[in-house]
Length: 93
Image 1 (cartoon, rainbow, N blue to C red):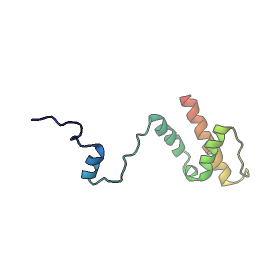
Image 2: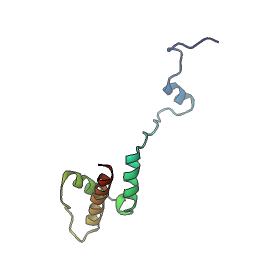
Image 3: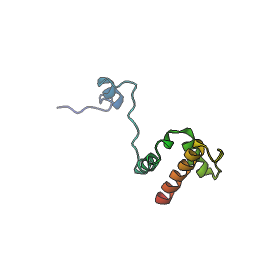
Image 4: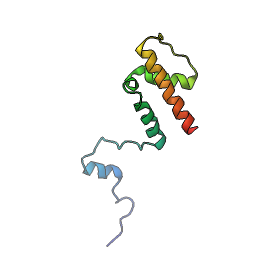
């Protein structure tokens, strides 16, 4: 049996195309830290589905205050987003 030279070996793209996976990229591996962050965020469902939740996490990272009125649902989502990142940082940093 002869050995294939580099030019004759199929590439990953060729294999994907042969399997009908053209144009599809494999999802990046989720790190353990990302999985843990997602677990913490899931505890705050349904707030974690709101844009204000991500703004809160980013606001915590940048040291910003909650811009929403205190009685609004957006303010609660912002606070929970900030708390998610706070809990995550305590555990990993």
